Length: 509
Image (cartoon, rainbow, N blue to C red; front, side):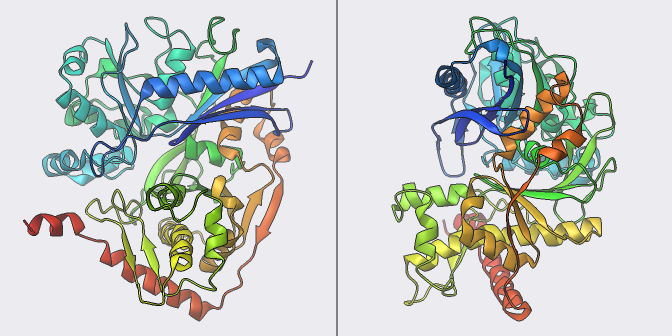
């Protein structure tokens, strides 16, 4: 009887469930989008109940389509949009408020007050992170400050906090009064509450942000041979399956790309764009605007650390072109429209819709389209949208090379946008390195499956996972150095035009 490992991929715009076979190939999958909630400019929310219901739907859909039984699924791994935060009641399972999404900027003032009170270095030295609205801790503080019931229950342990994988694992393993309240080290490292040296919640950080310890999940390794619990027979799987692996989505993509060696890097082109560089068991504390984060931890082994560059808008910018402007009807049409012109027509699109993330960290920035003339048309704008992903990636690569003193030799890529040939060629051109796409591009879900399967012994070692990886396509640079630098110089000028928009707006009143 064939056996599979299941991966629940809890993305920013949709949930997926994918079954992988022993060779790391997709057996079957299902996907369902959830609503994006924008209460006011810069605020982004999700409905946690909808995310749980959609998770159940995609699982049931795969079980029905394949007709397999629960005992054919070896284990379940989870991967998730990382910093998105939920606070819910332990006894009822009811969220006190919508999930506050990683892109949300509502905690900007709170973060500035934390820097004023404690200093940036206080947080950076312990967490490897800048103080920014991107991370989970301030989001939880905001809920406690604005939802009285959450505040009242927070000190008793009845109010639980978790990122999205914690929320779903809690429901999968029993829910109210029964579910396992846990997180893995990768997700914990994105809260601004974890001490990177001890791998534990830091009391000084908790006190500074104002988060009661009873709210917090137990921290476990990403790949954990000690099961976190099993799915329930009355749950979406219809049987008991161990849940024993979790990774934040970008660390999961790194794991799925089998970047197990120091110096290996991958870039994921999804809702946002995220580049991770494996730095081994050594933490490199960035001085160039990058994050120091945990890549993964296997059982009780030393954790593997990474440098990370985070870009807020990538695929979501294409969705904006589709949904808000109506310039395209489907996301893949962006490539055909961009191909109607030979270059960007001197048009640059800086998608700072929620400020700029790495390496700039400018929450005051907002999106701009620069270089417009009467010559520009919608093809040039479409091309500028795609090129924005590539330029932002170069920003991060340059910062990484300064921090690590390691020059990038090639870049492994994954995510939905890597099917865009025009973007991948331009990325190779502007970086001046080969771009390599694997055969299986769903590496985020694959990493979660690998985590669970390694924990149970379904896969014997990371060496076996390396054997599974294979190159699907490669792009090589085809641009002269002078042209490359001319384009990049104009991109940097466009970046500067996006700065201080929020302050300038206030000054107008």
